[in-house]
Image (tube, rainbow, N blue to C red; front, top):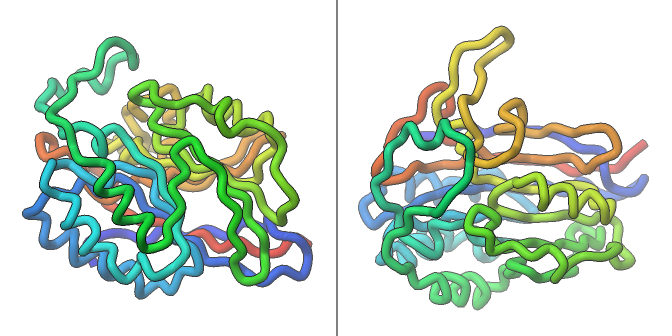
Length: 271
């Protein structure tokens, strides 16, 4: 297995509810030649999830849509939720890696258009819910889950007002977004969501040795570096799970102390 499984358990369901195993992946950055990563993605099904959530950046090449749908084939038979990231709209272009260490601002360097509608249609045809500025209600293991999402905040495509407001009658309210910018997290927290799923950070992609583990150099957004990967929570807010993702840009195929990973989050009943 060419990736790590990051596991966590969150007691967020009503008393007596059956557990729900959520497989959360992000940032596949697929190109047609990523045979090992495709094999890894196909192995996700072995973790026996009840629900699959993708927080975007499926692609990194204009010809990768059929590759992604092939890699995800068995997972697409399960209930799923997804949003898109910047690389689902535009192919990556070479840029100075040091720019990632600077304050996040200014115009984006974008590559050629990617046929994102083909990807969306392929996922939706198999039953996955498109949460780019949409809400959906699903029932998993007897629990009603309201999910809402935004389009990519890194490209300023997000408009949380399109999905804002109190959750409907449900057992769990979740938010899904690609890039965990503060404005998106704050808006979701104002609506009292229970859990938020995001990606984008690559866990920092390059991490330094640090007491207790390692420290991210950047999150490529305004999320604090201490929350670059895994589950975290701040007082009065929703749980946040940030997937460090599976891939990299084709122009920066290096990860230091931040290996490819997928999350398996078990949601269970509160006491």
